Length: 417
Image 1 (tube, rainbow, N blue to C red):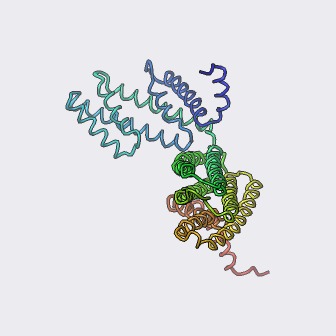
Image 2 (image 1 turned 120 degrees about the vertical axis):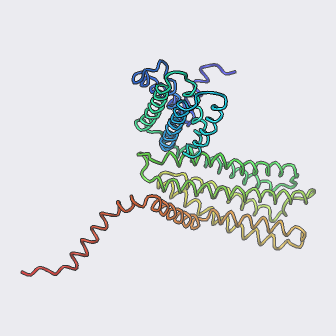
Image 3 (image 1 turned 30 degrees about the vertical axis):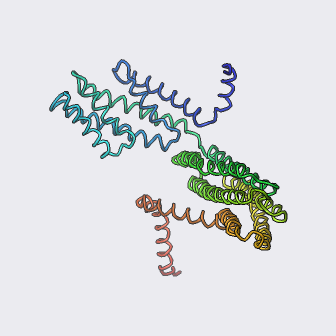
């Protein structure tokens, strides 16, 4: 077991990670909300205020605002239900069951999301007080509002960090693992004898890569939320779309890579006592897979680069790797076609291998990426206009007035001296 200083050093190295940052921010906000609740209310131990602050102070400002609103709504709904019950029926076993049923139902109706149980909890706590129901209800609402307000102000004053860098690191790590797998497959192509077990192990790695996309997707979602309502970000929409479309491409490439590895596993199972590929084909296939590995790496650098010069360099490298891969692909296809008579029963697998290479080259294509980005930007802009039509009309009002003034000036007769 490591000693305490080593643990502290390790924690210091990880101080920029979301978990560490969130832990410090939540503890600070909860403590401040407790002090404020002691000052503003008569409750001896207003623990509901720091509890609300813990739930409200999320990793991103967008999540803080939405969570705070839902939390306050759930508590107010529960308090109102309990106040009505206390005036009509009081507390008994059947009224408690009815209270919980009604509270959960109303919680779903008011759309408080994950705080649906909080409606019933608030109602039970208030109804369980035999004396001073109204005071208890008011105190509970006050504590909740204090915790929510303190949590919101905390995130407004101390703006949460933008998690684009963390998401970029996850994307680069995913691309790095894909690159290493492609390089391992390229080395396997030149082996004189490729046992099925060894290729099957690479297939397991390809399947893990496909499954781990979900973790990268969660990191992208966190980065997207951190861009919303954040004053530090100048072009949040473009950044969000670049990351999202980039991950979509890598996700498709991960599926293609898994299928390609399955094809090589099938070839290895049929060629147990001979090389996986003929001696003339193996070097060309190794070069092709190595070029694909470089293209995947350059693509990840391209979508995660925040500096224009780095993005331009990554795009240039990607173009070079894709051109080289296309040339290698044509060479491999020509060699395999010449030797189709040697293993005629395996021509389907060779064709499948080339088809998967073509799909990956198509997904990584620079022109296709540009078209996809433009389509997503147009779609996102259209959604924003449809969601906030009044704000759009207000924003366009100065431009409409200018156009009308120009038309009026153009239509008016000239002055006569």
